[in-house]
Image 1: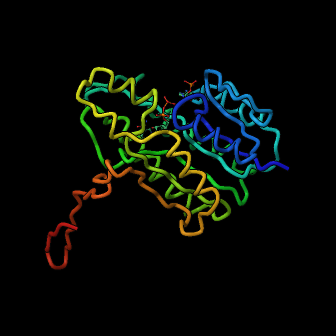
Image 2 (image 1 turned 45 degrees about the vertical axis):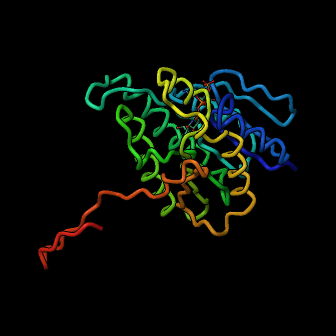
Image 3 (image 1 turned 120 degrees about the horizontal axis):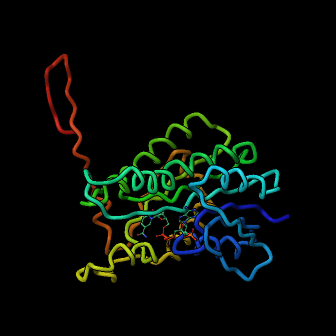
Length: 244
Ligand SMILES: NC(=O)c1ccc[n+]([C@@H]2O[C@H](COP(=O)([O-])OP(=O)(O)OC[C@H]3O[C@@H](n4cnc5c(N)ncnc54)[C@H](OP(=O)(O)O)[C@@H]3O)[C@@H](O)[C@H]2O)c1
């Protein structure tokens, strides 16, 4: 019997690389995306869906007939540039419905079949390293991570690990940087490098407890690991204010 994996965003970028890796590991892979995920492999089942549509979300769970799912990878995501105080309701929904709401609803819908299963969220280091014009993207990833911190506390029967990559050379990043002539593509990681790490986590995750978040960088991006939160503490008894 093949192990079973469900992955969203399997048609492109990081998700496509992870789906290919899972097929190599002999998983039966259900891949969710709007446009075709093309894998010449009998173990790949494409589910054409828009994850921002509640009807489509319901259909995904019906199309997966398996009683037990070993791995769910919430990977599909999007980003766009916009000033933090200039977005429209539609732009807000486009990003939050896909990056925040869809992983929650899909996990909720598949929960009964994820007993002893592993959930890997492809989040982003942008949950803490914020950038101008990316307020919606950064906050959607921060919200996702905090939400799943609580899921990890409540759901003892499944393990949740969030992966927070820095820059990865994908069609999404190519589109976001198309007008930035100064962007150094040599700095970026390849989708296959993220997939390789996902494979390692699937194979052995005993060092990572549920709720763990892993920032993924290459040598050229390692300063992202030196992130210092601008967090302070105030003690009402001593009236002391100090940087934590
Ligand atoms: N690239 C980076 O630098 C980077 C860094 C950190 C984190 N990430 C995260 O990595 C994940 C994958 O991003 P990527 O860079 O690989 O992007 P990508 O190449 O644009 O791939 C995104 C995938 O999501 C699918 N998708 C988009 N909207 C969808 C929808 N409404 N319903 C179903 N599927 C949908 C796309 O397929 P269809 O268009 O066919 O639907 C595609 O397969 C995202 O969560 C992103 O935030 C990326």
